Image (cartoon, rainbow, N blue to C red; front, side, top):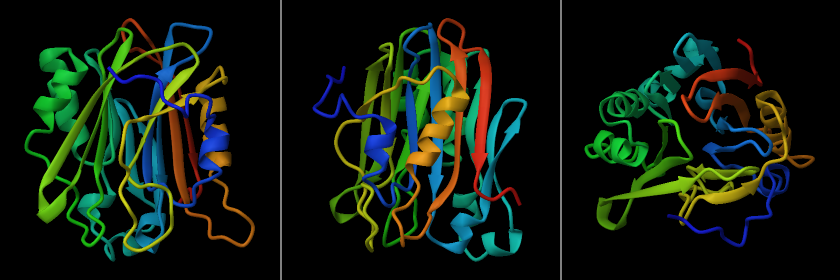
Length: 252
């Protein structure tokens, strides 16, 4: 179990306003006044291919799709187009890649988020986008008052480092994991350490998505790396989806 750290008083606005390029990120937590969870998936991108995307709502989840197929092929479509969130009666899976599908299958088989992540991701590595080697970040939720988060990243000499975190749902708290540290340098450094604890006072998925998206607004004179932010609201007991809010910078 991860303990609360010194960033426990951070809000999304305060935290993200100090970052220039977090890459992709996931936030999971519980609303302050009700037994409902929120799950956030966010995308920032520097290249034209990364910018030419949006999140769309499907019956069983949220997908990343291109707004300009011509630009997507200049990058790696296999890394740029994927299911960001998938849900079923067994739970909810969130990730920054095609591993989302495997996580949901594992949740349907074992109904335990930490066990599902370890099983689903045992053969996955970091993304092959050298020299960055973007980490794979994932979240699993199967109902109840805990969720699981993982990050798979490149270690020394090309080794694969897998970290898993079983995290409590605490009213008014959210847990944040990102692919990068938030600085805009080359190669961009990977996130490290435990998930960041955030204070969440918003009461709806729309309010959270809007707050996070607005907090990513760049400083004056800086490039806007925002691509999309989505938030879902679901019941704690059965993980039933109650609300979905998507904000896309480019609608395509």
